[in-house]
Amino acid sequence: MHIDPWTLALQAINLLVLLALLRWLFYRPLLAVMDARRQALQTEREQAEAARRQAELDAADLGRQHEAAAAAREQLLQAARQQAAAETEASALAARVSTEQCLREAQAAIVRERQQATQALFDEASGLAVELARGLLAQTPNDDAPLLARLMQRLADTPAAEWQTWFAEQAPRRVVLRSAAALGEDRQRGLTEALHAQLGADTEVGFDTDPSLLAGAELCFPHGVLALHWAAELREAEHRWRQHLPATPATAKALP
Image (cartoon, rainbow, N blue to C red; front, top):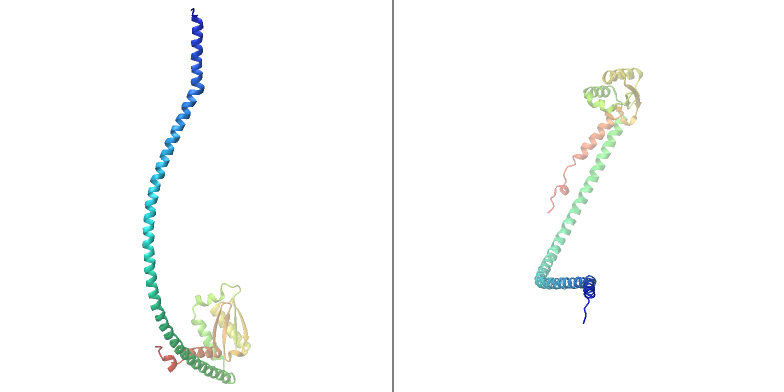
């Protein structure tokens, strides 16, 4: 038997090439698939173990929740029993309080009605007295000179910083003297000079009449009024009179 070395060498080379191709094309992918499968199995085992541990933790937590729910249910039942008892007692107390409140409200209503009736009678009497005084004063001859003099003195006694705010920086400044009776030219001229001396020569002075003042006059600034007349005095007297309403048995009685 004759063996050709070249043929043997070529066959050996072919075998090596075949083995290399098999290793490259089949063996390495097969190893990769086996490694991936091994890793997948390992991951599944780890996940299964973690799921088991989580299930044990969930079971323990569920047990604790069940115990807590039982304790909470017992507390709710105890609280409901206590609330029912408290509501029963509160209902009885509310009934007593409501009865007492109704009695107090009835007594208060009676007192208020007495006070209102007394106040109405007092207001009517004071109104009639003021109207009677106003009517008598309107029919009484009077001289406005003393009241005008006192009004000018009151203006002189007023601090300049105060009456200057009545003008509120108005230019030109203007003031109107409104009197109960018409003033003659001589008196107007004298009052104008007095006002110029007090308020400044650039102040415009006007005159007007208002019979409702009864007697006296008032100085009307753009943002203020300085008054001295009988109508204002009557209003002030009526106001003071209403503030000093004497206590009646109905108003002085203390509620129980």
